[in-house]
Length: 296
Image (cartoon, rainbow, N blue to C red; front, side):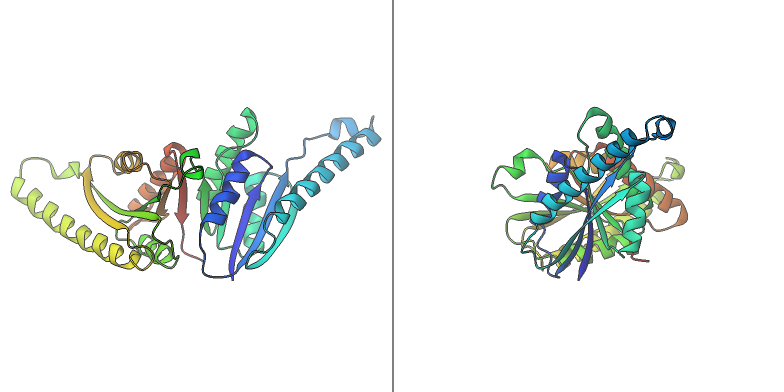
């Protein structure tokens, strides 16, 4: 069973998350938990003077949440697996992460935006915080109307850097039978090393050549793996001053619908860089972002 936690708040972003979940052809049956987190306002200052009114407000929040969950759960009737609704109260980020740990979820799916201007800010920060702190992989959904309303190919960019977690992300993606209506681009970006300077061009060329050859090998290996999932796979090795900016430019260039990247890099320093890369991609990419993590 594939254990998935799907966050909902009744917004269009939540419906987008449901659309993308339904679009992914998982091979395993799903153990799907749909979670609604009620952010209850502090009413302590009113409880003493208006206890019945406060109780009425809380009951209204509860009933609205239950009705929303029942509607969302009904949309997944007939899935291969199980589905349940879970109504919680508290801070969205902390509550969803704790629930994912309780359910031993392997993937959290959350929309990138909420219902109102305030909720858009909250959902944006919530999704980024969940992607950073959750113990499991996180899919932040932002599907374009273009792909939702047309039959054009679904376009995926998979970023690899040679780290174990990025290779496991490739393995995970290769295990999903995406089919012929999906294009996958495997991209590896070599960041220019300013500390080498310009005084020793032979050394720079030697290092550049070795690094590029290794990345070419990694990319071609990933391409071969992913061809099990779809025949439409290509690979690129790029060099740039900023790996993050180059990845964002690549996402825009291919008009990607989904980018997949690992949460950790090769070393302690690079883990920090990959972490900051994830955060920037989550905030600036105009597509869905799948942050793959090692299961703990």
